[in-house]
Image (tube, rainbow, N blue to C red):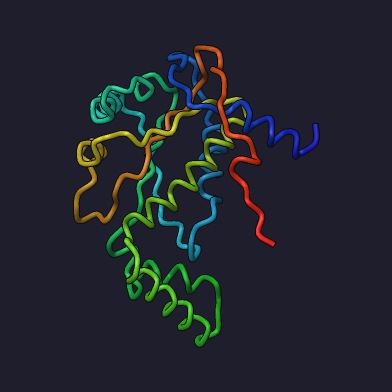
Length: 208
């Protein structure tokens, strides 16, 4: 199988798994592989505005399931990853986080200052919290596709009560994190349902 065929196959088997085998564990190396895929995700300005929490506690999972309107995947999955979006001080153009992230590029001072100014103008003109959450969704997609490539199922959960989720994760308002998504991972207990997608010609327009 060529790399293209293998990736296409992973995309084909990935689906929103609604029911997991409760006793089928994920190997530590496989979990690390999935998390590494999230770490390597692209992000605007290269700021990687995410934090991953692997929720092991059964009581926390039950609390999170209640905050996610009873979605049972939270309790059934082998591993649960919460993706937090960095906000507040992390996105401050003159704060330590942004400065350190840009400094690692090793740019000359003039170029460094230009990038900082570009970012400052951009972040001032956008909804920083929503922008950060959107970046986290890229990392989530990377993790779900990586999981599918090694035969592990997932389900992106964006339907939740944010404050209740953050309470369960012990996130305080002054921590400058907000919940972006919850990702249950595990092995499906039922067959894959039919997939419905629009045709490529229905969604692509070429401008010449």
